[in-house]
Image (cartoon, rainbow, N blue to C red; front, top):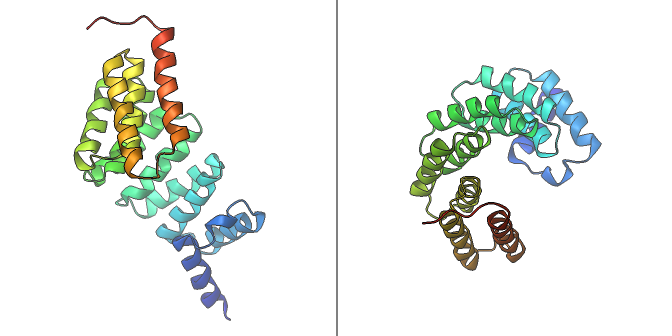
Length: 205
């Protein structure tokens, strides 16, 4: 098998995530570094490599590859969404907000990107904007559990308990129809809201 054939084979595996269960294997990281070195101008591959690093906590390395992928293909919303995750993992929320906003601008009909934008807006204290982004995400996908989770956190920080509990209730309702939100997660979010409500002054309605 020639070098070009090998590269095409491994590129396909990486992009299709066939070997994702091996992501913590050191050989996978070596492969990612090797492919990034020999295919530095393949935007899709560089993005995939960046996300692989991000998915197992190597956020700085992920950022490096994802920024390069964004330069190679500045119209790929997924790259900016992944870059936002890498920046958020390093606590760079202002930069993550810029990346997530770019992703949402490039693909305004993607509920996932709007949830990412809402989370970043929440982390930098832009609560009204976060609520607007998350509600728009729910308009596009009325059963997006991540949108309800982020909304519940925003409303807790605003001490709007009725809205927070309503969002958690929607998580429960969604969980009854799908296995994506486990009972353990349901209990975690409910207890989190209740603990916040007990630890802060309660507003009158």
